[in-house]
Image (cartoon, rainbow, N blue to C red; front, side):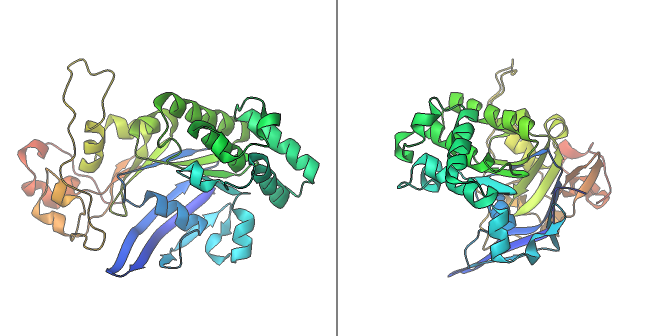
Length: 339
């Protein structure tokens, strides 16, 4: 049984302009100890997916799913009180901006101790010792002294370490990291990710890493879920995805990355156009208006096609019905069954 199983997740928001579908029928699962990367451009639905599972969205949101099971329990059937016991204890989240996620008027020590007192039932002294232990684990120098400091007294990288310490203080089974290295310089990014990797090995926690950085995904993730316009458009192991991406959107993301092994010094190829307006999604494939392979059949609903080994992609290029519509550059592609 997977640690987390999500089936047909759909999240919509009521706005003044109409109903926005931010996540549209998303399904995935996560095993204990596994790291899953969720990638895509801004607005693709990555963060909303995590917040939907955690039930942390505003009242303007409506979340439905056939199944959201965590550790064998139905999260949709939980009361808000029960969810508060799960959040921070069994499922912890590192948010994108630690400065706005930490309370500016409480010391770092108070904020970590509060979580362990609430979820682990520790006394004041034991909670303080646990806070020191966690700051030491995330490699903050002189943790006994820094315990009494406030968030503004830490650098961006150190604040992110504090967020990791808070998230892991109760030994969660699942850690959701939402763009944990945004706005950090490259050296600090590597340190933060390596720290998460080390702590995962130590605690056995599963990790969902939400990012737009495919280089980070290649380094740290076992499996990758690619989102576009609220949909899953490709899912594969990191090895499969980087060796043979199937969805043109995934191919575009990879083509826009600089490569250290590029001896030919090829120019980076940006994806043309803009992400879709979720209020007015095109019929069929949401990526079609930006796709170099666009065909008439792309105006129809697109199923997932199964390439074997758990690798699926949502693209008509691999459909037998589209063989005669393919551009010359795609004529040699195989056809595969829909999953």
